[in-house]
Amino acid sequence: MSKPNLYSTALALMLAISAQHAQSAPEVNNAAAIRYISGGVGDEDLDMLQTEQVNHRLKMVFTTLDGSFLADVAVLVLDRNKNTLIQAKSEGPVMLLDLPNGTYQVQATYALETISRDVVSQPNRLSTVYFRFGN
Image 1 (cartoon, one colour):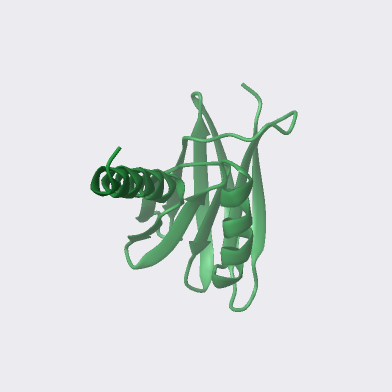
Image 2: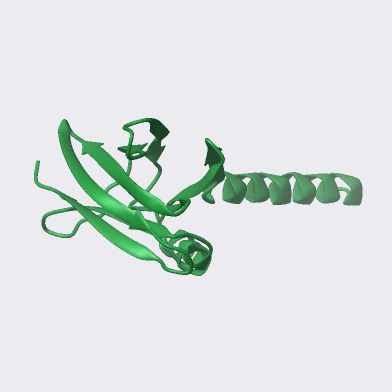
C-alpha cells in the first residue's frame, strides 16, 4: 500500500472511531430552559455522569426491582401548576436535571408502568430519586 493510501485509510479509521465515540456519549439537552442529560450505558458513560452530577440538582436512577439498570424510560416533569416542563426519554439508567428552586412532580414510565414522585429542587444540593419498576 502506498503512503498516501495508508494515510487516507488511517485518517478514515480515526474519523470513524471518533464519530462512534461521539454518538455514544450522553448529550446535554435543554427543555423550557432546563438543562438535562441522560445516559449511563457503559463504565465510561457512568463515570462522565458521575463527574457531571455536581452541575445539577436532581439525579434520577431507573432500575428494575432486582437492581438491573433500565434505558428508554419516558420522563415527564411537571411544575406545581401541572404544566409540562420536560417530556423526554432517558437514554440510560441515569438522568440529571438542573431544575430551578421549587417542588415538581416527576412521572417515569417503562413498559406501561408509571411511577410518580414529588421532588424538591434546592440550590447547592443534589437530590437522588430512584424509580424501581416491577414489570
